[in-house]
Length: 180
Image 1: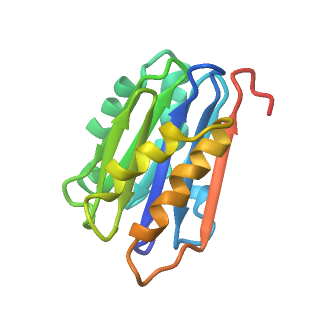
Image 2 (image 1 turned 60 degrees about the vertical axis):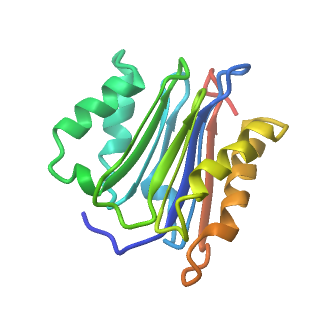
């Protein structure tokens, strides 16, 4: 399935105190959450963007559910994907291990930054300073996981390309028990 170009920022994270997993994504693509963000309580969180292959969400979660770490799950999916150079995918598992891939053919500016238990990634941004600059907004904010994910997303706004405004935002958060 192919989609038109859409500048996108996302963050995947696991809260080390609560075990909550979450994804926040914003884009000028309408209904961005329906294709980018995937979470399952006690398993993991996945964000798939750039030239999206929605299979990364359910397949990544299935592999993590089967015992793969986030790095193992992502590595296996990338190995089987001829379009991997056009993909941007991040995963966090229930133990806080994070894996991220920004394909070499993603539309500039595109990149990612990994921190302890989280990753921020962006594509079609104004410059390469976006993703390294957004993670402090997540780490230094207070509140529950959803509030910290939102803080990171809000920070990325001024750095986005000027043409497409944010049309869609989604935050998906799951507690360790699945209740939230």
